[in-house]
Image (cartoon, rainbow over all chains, first blue to last red; front, side):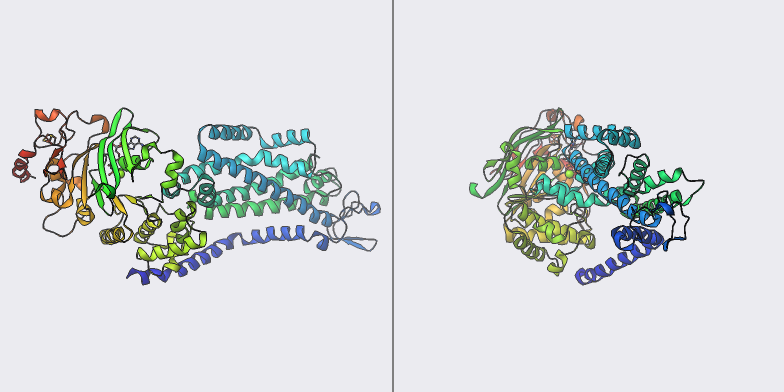
Length: 294
Length: 333
Ligand SMILES: Nc1ncnc2c1ncn2[C@@H]1O[C@H](COP(=O)(O)OP(=O)(O)OP(=O)(O)O)[C@@H](O)[C@H]1O
Ligand code: SF4
Ligand SMILES: [Mg+2]
C-alpha cells in the first residue's frame, strides 16, 4: 500500500530541509561569526581583556593605537584618562549585550503575552491593550526613553526597565495579529472543541505557531536596543562611569576627535559591526521564518 | 428501536441569523450504532444545524427554540462549562479540512491523545499509548513511528485518518462528521467511508454524517434526513428513501447519481438553479420556486406526511400522489 512508499521519504526530506537551511545560512555566516565573537568577548571579558578597564594611567593619556608605554602595549591606544581602550571595549560589549538581551527578553515576553491575550480575548481586553500599544508607539521611542530615564534616574536596571516599557508594543502588535489569524485556524477551533481550556490553547497551540514571527521581531529589536543603550549612555543617562559603555566612550571621544580619533572611532566601529550583523541575521531569519514571506 | 437506544434526539430546533430562521424546526434522531445522513445542497443549513447541536453556532446566530437531547440531557440548557465537559468525550466531531484541522507543530500522537489529556481521562503516557492503538485502528501503518511525526509528513488521506482517530479515541457516544470526505479524492474517500463503517461497529459510536453527495449516503447511511432551505423535507430508512423517494427534492437529488456507471462522484449541482439566499426563502413550501409540481396549494407550508404508514418514512409535500408526473417531465432533462 501507500504506507511503504510514504514512509521512507520523510526522514530524507527532513535532512534535505536542514541542508538547505545551512546552505541558506552561508550568506550571513560572516555576520553570525562576528556576532558570536562579540558574545564570546563579553562572556570571557576578564580572561581576554589585557588590562583592568578602569585602571587609569595619567601619564599614558591619549596614546595612539600600537603605543608601548612603561612596558605595557596598548593595541588600540588609551583614552583621556590613560585607560586601555581595548579592555574598555571588551567590557563595554558586556553592557551593550546584556542591556539588549534583558530588555528584549522583558519587552518580548510582556508584549507577546499582552498581544496574545488581546488576540484571543477580544472585547475590551483587546481595546485596552492595543490602544495602549498605539499610544506608546505614537511617541518617538528615543524621546520617551529619555524622558523616562530622566524621571527614574540613570543606571543599568533603569535603562533595561525603560527599554522594556517602551518596546513591548512592537511585540504585542505582531503577537496580536498572528494570534488573530492562528486562533481562526481549524486546528485551534478543534482543540477548543475537544475541551482544551484557554491557557492550553495559548501555550500549546498558538505560541509555537507564532514564535517564529516573534523571534524575527526580537532579532531586529536587539540591534535597536544596542543603539538605544549607546544613545542613552552618550547622553549620560545610561550606565554610569566608570563602567565602560560604548555610548559613553563615544561621548568622551567626541571632545578629542581632532587630536585622538581612536577614542571615538573604535567604539563607533564596534557599534556599527554589532548592529549590522544582528540586523542582517534578523533579515535572514525573517525570510526564513516569517509566514508572510513564505 | 427502543427508546433507550436513542442517543441524539433533536426536536424542533430553530436557529436564527438576524430575522431569518436558517434552521427552522428541524427534528431528527440518531440511535446507537446508526449512521444518519443529513443531506442537502450547499447553503441549506446543514452545517448550522450541526453547529447548533454542539453549541458552536457563530456569534451572529441565536437558537430560537427546540431541544437537543443527548442521552436524554438537553444540550441547549447546558452551560459552556458543561458543554466543554462532554465535547471530545461524549460528543465528537470531524471537520471538513483534515489538513488544516491538525496543528502543524504538534506531533500526530499528541494530537490524537489530546482529548484524553484535556479531559483528564488518562495520564500523558497512557494517553499516548492509547493514541498509538487508535492510529493502528484507523489503518495507519507503523503507528508508533507515525505518532512521532508532524502532520506535514502525512498525506491528505492519512491526515483524515488521524482526524478520525482524534475524534474517536475517547469512544464518544455520538460523532458528527461535517463533509468528512469532500476534500479527498474518490479512492481515498471510499477508504475513509469504509473505515467509518467499520469503526462505528467496533466502537459503537452513532454517527450524524453531513454530506451533499447522495453517493456517500448510499454507501454508508442507515437512515437519511433530506434538508432543504432550513427544513427537513423527507426522512426515512435509506432503503425506503432510495426505493420510494417521496419528496420532489429527494427525487431530483437521487437523479444526480448516475444510474449506469459505478462512479459516484456526481455532486448535487445537477439540479437546476440553487438554494435561494436565506432572505428570499419563499412562504409556504420553500421548494416552491424550483419544484416542477408546484401550484397554489404549495403556498401553504406542507406538514410531515407519513409515507410508510408506520411513520418511519415521512415527507413534507402536498403532492406526494402526483410524483409520477415528474418521471414524465424528467425525460426532458
Ligand atoms: N456566520 C454566519 N453569518 C451569516 N450567515 C450565515 C452564517 N453561517 C451561515 N450563514 C448562512 O446560513 C445558511 C446556511 O449555511 P450552512 O453553512 O449551514 O449551509 P450548508 O448546508 O452547510 O452548506 P455547505 O454545503 O455549503 O456547507 C447560508 O445561506 C449562509 O449564508
Ligand atoms: S409542496 Fe408543492 S412545491 Fe413543495 S415540494 Fe410538494 S409539490 Fe413541490
Ligand atoms: Mg456546510
